[in-house]
Image (tube, rainbow, N blue to C red; front, side, top):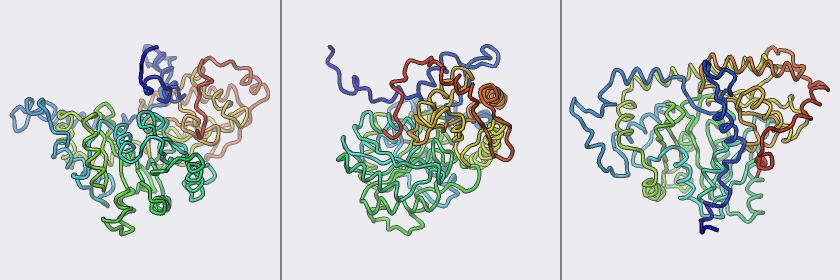
Length: 473
């Protein structure tokens, strides 16, 4: 046997989650409106492709930025040579200004407290390396982004302890849920180093309330732990209530900048969702703690943002006319597209959590399950992938505590493809279920006896049943 590391041989990456396996099935049979009209439509990918025309128009009008020129002179050699890992000052300034603009300029950010990383994945992992040691834990409210099982645990050796949230209050965080998670960690002899939240939430598509943020600050202050707020969807809040950053709540509380709680609140940001640029690999860490900033800066040398990317985006984000128009138009288009998805789902008798942000809806299909179990959820998901040819993400992959919820993305595909997806889903529900079209979001659906038998007898076409993630683990 080869002498390999534990990371190379231990199955803790999370790649066997149904979240990632759905992508693999899509890649084997991707939909194309001409070449593969019966292929799988990708609705499991949270990409924002709705405003590329605005960015491409800007590039056409500002060719110097992409040609690596400044005042008509080439700066290619300057950008091609080694750059300090602190990042280009002009880009860091443009980045913090854009972060403030998204938040309505209610808070400001110091570029000296910003660390650039190769995407939010790198930013989150770097934070965990800075704040916790192997065998320690972070608390995360459920449902949460399935990639966290990889990003936060795989190389760091840190454990995730779920804060169980339920549909009874729209999956909001409660004091009881926080305390129960903390006590669960103690029972497992895990030292809790912090709480990590995504705001706006992935996969819920909702913004956190001010009361939730106050509760979190009080909790971390009482426990003497950190709070990481992953705010990569902050620019996608398209309707009320508006997005509230944890930094705004710190300001509201008049926290002393020298206080411990001020030092223990951190923010993750990225241009992957708000600008729809995941391929550019631009993420950021923001911390009020000088030691965290110093350590994260050193670690960033393992995942730098290219100088060419920084130069281009510095010019783009410094154009205030562009950013103002982009933010407003992005909100408008996201709102329209989300409304279209919700309407299409309603025609199939399916409702969603009332969302106001993100690139997806948290969809309630509990009434379509043959039983209130995660096994039934996986059966339904497999039928949707293999028979309806839609890739959506089952709630169990997000560690949801209730079977029957699914994340469905709407901003990564053309409108006509979304229409086709809704037609397929409606036909599927009509064939297998007695589900009348609903009005006003109310639903009345019944799984017929014959269809229950059909679902029960349906044989899995996938070979990874025994590897499906267990909610809450």
